[in-house]
Image (cartoon, helix red, strand yellow):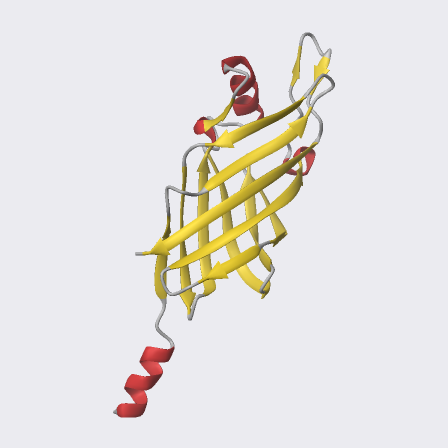
Length: 170
């Protein structure tokens, strides 16, 4: 009985939920200027054994990815991300390759790709922090880079997602 209970304790998983202190921005460029948008509504959870992530589910609401340049840019971005058909961008962990690389499925605009995401991971008994950045090529996800001013302004095909996510014990 003692061995059985020790085995259950050592394999217990803790669940962590995304905290409000988490941030995510997306940086890109266009033929006129560089730009940054912010993911304002995110949700997620981590299941971990001894602070090592075993399961990560993370979502961003496309509707609440906003720029400082106003609704015209936001509307073009939301249309490019196919907000109506695919209202969320998501990441689901497949494996932890090592302490600084997560492998998972990234879904953007309905297109799924396996990605390796470099991270700085800090874990304690009460929180797990994941920080890093990931370069994404829009056309890899079937996204046509948006244009404006009758094609005079064209968004670059590459963007960089920067994240600082804090998951706290539920």
